[in-house]
Amino acid sequence: MLEPERWALFLDIDGTLIELAETPDGIVVPPDLPENLHRLSMSLGGALALVTGRALPYADQLFTPYKFPIAGLHGSERRDPSGAISRVEVGAAFEDLKAALVREARQWPGVLVEDKGAAVAAHYRQALEQREAVEAAMPRYLDMAGPDFTLQHGKMVMEIRPAQASKGHALQAFLDQPPFKGRKPIAIGDDVTDEAMFRTANELGGHSIRITETPGDTEAKSTLPSAAALRAAIKALASGVKPDAA
Ligand SMILES: O=P(O)(O)OC[C@H]1O[C@H](O[C@H]2O[C@H](CO)[C@@H](O)[C@H](O)[C@H]2O)[C@H](O)[C@@H](O)[C@@H]1O
Ligand SMILES: [Mg+2]
Image (tube, rainbow, N blue to C red):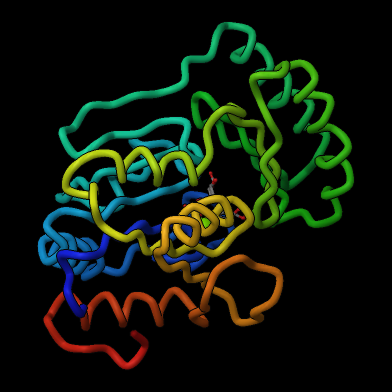
């Protein structure tokens, strides 16, 4: 990367670093990815963060033995470069809501409910015929959750998550602290939730890249066709070789 001391890198996980799978637990982390990310992070002086919809513990174990600065649950929780963790707390009522959603989902064969702590997702990737049922039910659960929560659309998933955070806010929070401070952001993602960090990166004079084969409705400044293409670029940058895709 040219002038690595000028840039900070913000990377989404699912669909960006790692190919999507049929189920949330079905993803496969390419064995060289953690090491390549670590090396790239070193070349950026540590200014590399993961910004994901996953919960922090789940995301962390994907990249063992390395731990990167990270924002989880679409920005609702964050571990900063010093290791300090901040997160939105949810009360007992949200636990009741999640239990009620799990019970109702028994009527939707093939739908997976993912309990992420302060967020809950209903995945219909394996039961497309249940999409309408999920889309009809989730606004009801949002009403139960109250105004501190919002609905997050994703790839064959709807989830309820804390409203006050976003991936854009997470990116800004990282940029307020060293080693991110004073650098221009590059945000890379693949989904609706990533548009918030694309906007923030663009507003700050940085760059944004959406992983998609069908460029269109995105605020990202450029695109890459696949997670594999991004990993190839990361590998080349990590080994000090200028990649074709950059
Ligand atoms: O922000 P991300 O890191 O991209 O996380 C977004 C969501 O990713 C996961 O769901 C998606 O990926 C699954 C595995 O490939 C796939 O089965 C599912 O259909 C996708 O929606 C994850 O399960 C969610 O919690 C994340 O919010
Ligand atoms: Mg993604």
